[in-house]
Length: 296
Image 1 (tube, rainbow, N blue to C red):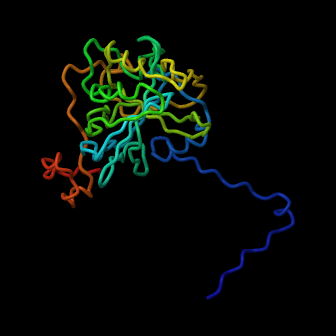
Image 2: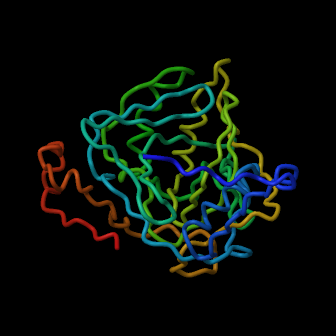
Image 3: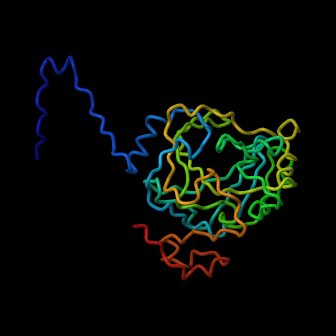
């Protein structure tokens, strides 16, 4: 075997090396969405999001796998700055595929933001309006939130945790497969770690009653003061792209109204659970005959 030698460079080529050719993907492809991360991933977040000024963009269905599967345990933690919700499964975790994603995205954790009253709390603003705790205000309590709030009296002090549920993440997270916003921007954590993040902002949201939001403000920071205003300041959008992925519903407002009846779950079983039903927890035995979704 032999390796063919590269041709020798001329003196001019050595002094003036050619720049690498940058190939820009076509607009309308998933690759173009990823290309935007290189241009706009360093821009600060959060920003105002609106249908006005957004770019309508095609994408495959965003597919939610295993969000109906009961975890082994769910734990909430008062970090002194926010509430973190994490869960553990005995086998495969929930994950997302499809949509604007070129790879599997595995569920990690949920964390909350809230303000001092019902007029603030969300990090992103929608149509220049701020909402309580990334949620809409509702006259009635949201049952999806209630099972988490039941553990709050046990985590009033900073750096404490407790178990809640356990219930599947479909009991908490609004799921969507189309009709949402996407943009790129940076996130700096409390520890100073900086990440480039793809932000997906759905039009349907959780809602929260006045009494439910009061439970958040009863939690203490490390100095035994109530935790309030743990949201980041709004940043300029600048010239970044906000993509409106596969708009479907009424486009008068950027957020959809609170549904009168609960939306049915769109989560499906992953191929691993389909092929190995013994992996299912006993609470999910009724899912064994669930058909597998075709992603094509």
